[in-house]
Image 1: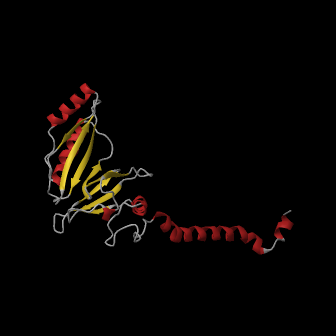
Image 2 (image 1 turned 120 degrees about the vertical axis):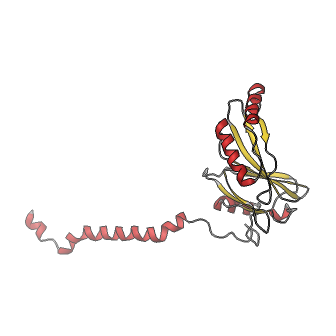
Image 3 (image 1 turned 45 degrees about the vertical axis):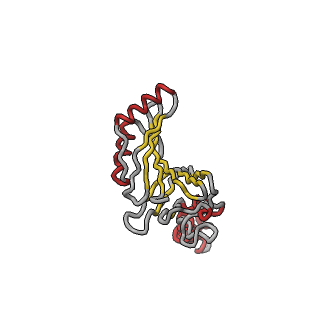
Length: 223
């Protein structure tokens, strides 16, 4: 048995090592060439997916690109903002999200041609509303519900960035109490902050169980 093995050609004994080497080389090539294509963000949008200045449009093609890239961009710097130009109906509301992967969108709203110049929102869902052929507002949702304390701290923190005055703790507590007694959600709104160059109003929707959700209603500075 030993004599038979010793008479095998020399290359037979090298074969396992050679196969292993080929496998390693193939894995390295895939990591270098294939992996970036699997993980990279989508490239620039095509002409039917964005405007000529790379702003988002909400046509079927535009929405496909928004879903692929998760980086919608809306220009509010020259109000009134024409609804048709954005691929939106003259009157209505279009909600984008939640994303099929449950990941957030990185929504950029440009407010003016000078500083301060808008804001970046990380959101699981937003709604664009139009009326009379003009964009009226963009409602941006915060992810998830929070208890009373978490809600108050979140809105107070956001007030510094967006310029509104946060609802008081007393008004939030009252909303939760009303929701518990009525069995219906109760909304509390801040004033309209303009420190970002556009209008931002916080809306807190409280439920009887003591949890609240937060969203921001963004409107062009003039319109």
